[in-house]
Length: 105
Image 1 (tube, helix red, strand yellow):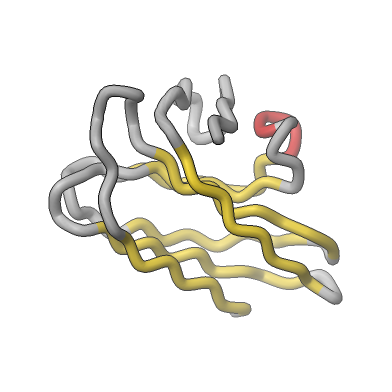
Image 2: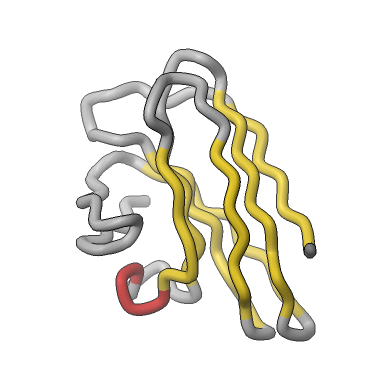
């Protein structure tokens, strides 16, 4: 998939390959997203309501500043289906393995 955004995450044009994980909330909640990549790559992670409308439904995001940087943020979300999208920073860069953790705060 390639769920490109122009303003999400953080004003960065996202063009790399990505992987989306869906989850459901039965009520509004504060959700913590933590992504720990292997040391060889610099991912971007963002939280959206609709993968086809990344900019319009972005609830939070983070991007690595150096290879292997852990990413961590919280977002206030309404009940319903949400998607966490993990993306490589550019189409030419190889991705890698990562640990994705979601929790309610």
